[in-house]
Amino acid sequence: MGWSVNIGKIFGINFRIHVTFFLLLFFIFISVLPQHGFQRALVATLFICAVFVCVLIHEIGHSLIARRFGKEAKSITLLPIGGVATMEEMPEKPAQEIAMSIIGPFINLLIAGVLYLFIGHWAGVGVPNLTPDSAKGFFAGLIGVNIMLAIFNLIPAFPMDGGRILRGLLAIRLDFVRATTAAVFIGQAIATFFIFFGIFFNWWLAIIGLFLYIGAGSEKQQVLLMSFLRQVPASEAMTTEFQTLRPDEPLRRALEHFHHGCQDDFPVIGEAGVEGVLTRGRILASIHEKGLEVPVSEIMDRTFASVDPKMPLDDIYKKLLSSRKTAVAVVDKGSVKGMVCLDGISRYFMIKTAMGKAATMK
Ligand SMILES: [Zn+2]
Image (tube, rainbow, N blue to C red; front, top):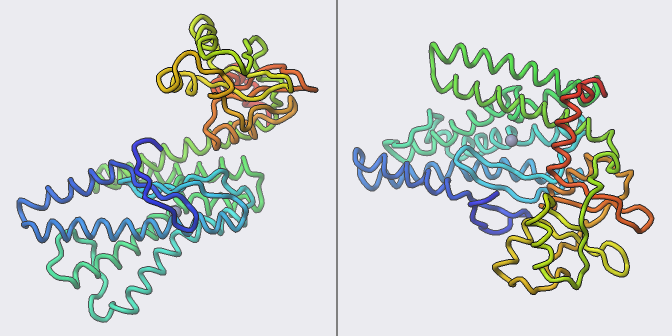
C-alpha cells in the first residue's frame, strides 16, 4: 500500500503504518488540546495508540493462523480505520476460514480478559473515553474498547470477521460461491437494517451499515470473478498481437513500441526463450533512473515471466497481484504465443459479463 512507512518485522511479517494514521494522531491531539490542555491531549493520543496496539495484535493473530495453513501474510498495515493484513491468498477450506477469522475477536476478548484479571478490580470496565479523569478511566476504557472491538468484528457481514465465519459455516454444506452469495445476502440485510435504524437513531450506525453493505458487495464480486476465471485457460484471454524485445536492445527501442503502439508490457526473448518481461512500470521508472541506452536485460523482470497456455486465469491473476506485476508471457513448447496482463483479464471478464456468459457459467 502506498504512503505507508515500514516499521519493521513482527513474526516475520512486514509491519507498516499508513501516513494518514499519524494524521489521525495529530488530529486527536489538536482537537483535545484547546479545551483540555497539553497533558490530556497527550493522554488522548496515547489512548488511540493503545487501541491500535490491540488492533495490531488482532491482525497478527489472523496472520499467524493463516501461516499455519500455509497462507503467508505479506504485511500488516495500520490505517486510521484499523489494521489490514495483506494475504497472498485467503484459505478457502471452511474450517480454515472459520479458525482464521474467529481468532481476531477472540484475541480482543482475551486482551480484555487479561486486563480485567490484573487491573479489573481497580479500574473496572468503562466506555472508551479520550479524556479520562484518571488512569483508572484510561484502563477501564481500554478494557471496554476491546469488548466493543470483539462484538463489532463478530457482526456477520463482510468485510468483518463475522462475515467470514458465517461464510465458513455455510460452506460446510454449500459450495464456496453459493456460501458467499448467501453470506453476502445476510450481511447486506443486516447492513440495510443498520442504515435505516441509524438514520433515525444514530448516524454512526448508518455509516457503519453503508460500509458493511459496500464491503459485502465487493466480496461477492471478487468471489464471482475468481470462480469465473478458474474456468478460463490463459490461452483464451491472452493478447496474440504483440511486439517482443531482445535482451540486448536498448530501452529506447521499448519506448518506441510503447509510444507508437497500445502495448504496455513486452516479453523479452533471448537465445533460451523468454528471459523476462518488461512492464510499463519498469519502462517509465527506468527512463529517469538509467537513461535510454540501458539494455532491456538490465531492467526487465525475470521472475514469474511465463506461464503455460493451460494455466487457469485465477492463478495468474493472484500471482500477478501478489508479485506486483502487470503482465506475463504465455509460452507453449518454447515459443511465445501471447501475453496475459491484468487489464486484459478485467477486460475479458467485462466482455463475458456483458455477453451474459459469466452469469451462466458456474
Ligand atoms: Zn479481524
